[in-house]
Image 1 (cartoon, rainbow, N blue to C red):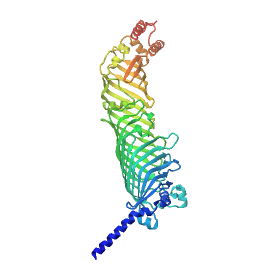
Image 2 (cartoon, rainbow, N blue to C red):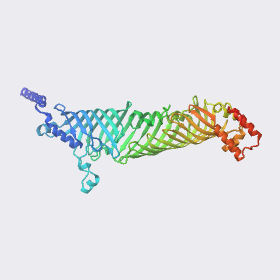
Image 3 (cartoon, one colour):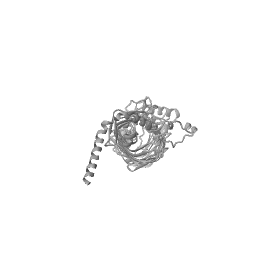
Length: 550
């Protein structure tokens, strides 16, 4: 009897195996294409086209080739997603006996996804929403519709493998950027519960992105507002390659980020640390020698696409500054209104980031001591930022640069030839940093070994200097300079700073000197009968390489 039972059981097993093997040949899975397309159309609220269907009994589902999901027509007439294949995990018994399709899982292989953003939001917002749920809120309210009428959709497992994601904006001048090696894993997706997920991708420029945590419940009206609680990790994000910023803005560098992102579907909060290496902020800039660290906390309103930076602690070596303000991401390019306030920052630590702003010290020079105070406003689109405000450097030493020898004939007038390293008691200015260059107004420089210098000028995008200054020479100024110094505005001698930031040239402003002399004669500051005046002018002309005055 036992042997007969074994034979019977063995025979049943053999029959079942034969059924499993032969069933895919007996059932033409392609005849289910209309039902599958209809089911996906309903679930995704998008037109879905699929190719050949292969039934796999052992894996419990079907594989669909050449999948195409249309985009939201208000964003794009092309496809939202195209994939080499899509595997649909099904409950077999309802499929075989009643032809009912119960989807329990999706696997998308090698998809290409296009994500577009407009002022109204993202193109994936309506993905998965039913037609009744995409009506206006006012219509839903007037009809008394309830938001509880979510589609009965639950996916036990979802995975997207080796995908490509193109992210961009809508509009005539829209630009896009591509992320590849995109992989997503999620389980127990539904409209009623949270679900765990993980997303990884390679960013433009060979960086990496990892997002992991929980999301949900899915928002059937707008999937972009689905609540999220996740950790974010970004490595080696190349700002110049992302496409978020126009290359002409000159902003470049590599970003590392580690932090959290939490959204309730209406407001998102984020905090963490950003480390920027090889940072560059203007077209004429060059990479900073040291990293810039920012510890921050921000909130972001999803619908108006505006946010507030509540805390931004900027660290450059031992130098620290506070960054705060607001930002708006509703346009084609994000705009900011920020304040940067740093007090008593070590100048030697800040030297490493001067190249990022298009500033270079004279060749061979270095800041070895001193403190810097700055109170700056940073405004405008991120690709055309304008930074304005007062900057004050005090008690600094500029080693490897002899200002006295650079002054040439002005130094001779002041009785100065060489002073060695330049001690700066004060350097203050109202600065404006923009893509086209830097403007400095109300410049006031006090060098105890020489005197004071005031004026204004510009540093062009290609580092050329154009400053008009007045030297208020110290007590050591020569007798030739005294009459003209007295006649000049504020008792100083006009001069120019030309050349480049790495090789500045200080030259007398002959026109300014002559004008000062004329004004002195006119207003009586220089007596016209004074013999000393004529002798002083002749001596000054010799120092300037000119013939004696008439």
